Length: 272
Image (cartoon, rainbow, N blue to C red):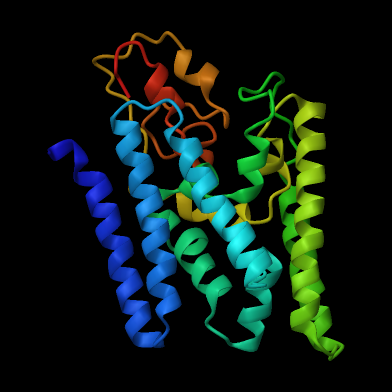
């Protein structure tokens, strides 16, 4: 049973968060929300332990569709970064702000960029494209993420400064338009650069939060040097081009590991 300790621990953590928020906020939605996500993630890890090929993809679809369709389209919560700025400026501790705090600001201290690998509804679609492993050298245009980050902040700040009415409705339409734009840009970049994850590497504004926190991540892929034969297969299958044979926190693209575990699955010596 020791090998199932991680999914059980993860489920316990999410249930603790779910119950705490349910009782403190007096809203049963939080019990359902965090229980659902915790069960989905734990199921994925359980399936991975059982060596099921599509374990991560199942979690991506369970969590990604829940957040996009249920929280975004049905509940009309802007779960994009614009929604985070909106609720932050209004001082309301709602789904978007809680989501960002748990998954994208403080959560990465524990699980790094696991959000990108298991829950992002943009990557959920991009991972269906044919370039699962980059076919071209990495581009030096990562600075674009800071531009999109600034644009999202300026957009919401301008609405408040201009005292625009019915901002909540605008936020919903911004969520719809933002997703269409993200998918269009993400798909175009994937084919242009022959890399499904090009959007994540160069454009996604969320990485401005994720990257610095992921540097200190507790859960990391590590290499057992006594088993490693330096075949390089782990580097060739990594969608984010992380050098997992280097255990240093300063390894190549260290803050970009999405814990997809492709390197672990493909290591011929179980060194990872």
